[in-house]
Length: 296
Picture 1: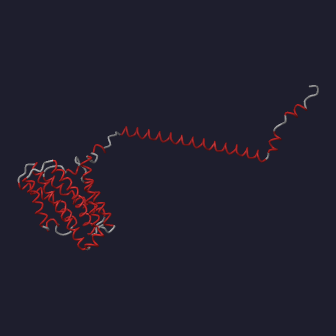
Picture 2 (picture 1 turned 180 degrees about the vertical axis):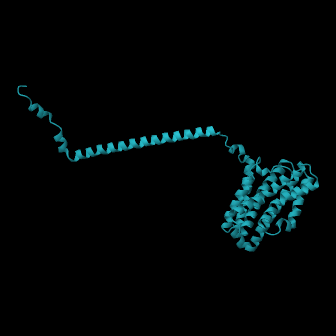
Picture 3 (picture 1 turned 90 degrees about the horizontal axis):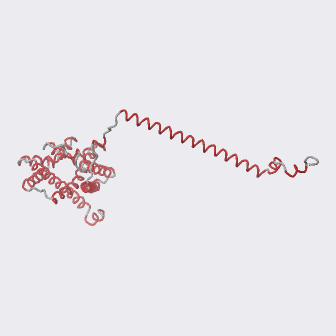
């Protein structure tokens, strides 16, 4: 489909439109995360400065940390003034309106799912284009997507929501990052961004709809004592020995049965090939009666 559009409209125009679309989504994510930061500031009863600070941290923190860690020059979120203005616009909207209705929450979740995939993709592509390997690319992709929210929560005095007690958020970022990485190695960066956006949106929405969460620490903790562990290992050894003995007996029985069967088959075969041997070995009852004692 993209090839047909490129043929009729021109590949250059197509490239420009795709870049413009991703830039629009990117700035939309900055705006929405500015709103999310402002909503947290409202719940904490911060003043206007708190709104602006949390909005900027939420919207631009992940990208700034990524660029600093990659030593890729001045962070893009600072050199492009639109990012700062858009984040402040989100803070202003959160300051003027409560945005606590059911539909506003759903809209923020849906849009945030799309942006999650886009930011994961941009982090992966930028890292790989700078010559780093797959693991740094995965880390930078996830950091771009969730780093701002972590900084925002810490600044507000909360435990970052991505650490647990919330629906899946880091997991969609990881899957979107891995998807982008696969398309990058295949030479399809823009297609990877499109797929990453869709995957981030789908997993985020499914997580909120189905209430998916990762297991808590208690679900992974080993609560068995040393005595219980030794008892379990002893029972396991006994079960293993019993199973081995049963297998050995079964194998011996099968072997004996096969040997007996082969012997019987051999006897039958010899009997069919040499019937005179069997006849010579079996005495005739009529001969016995004829050769009996005189006068009997």
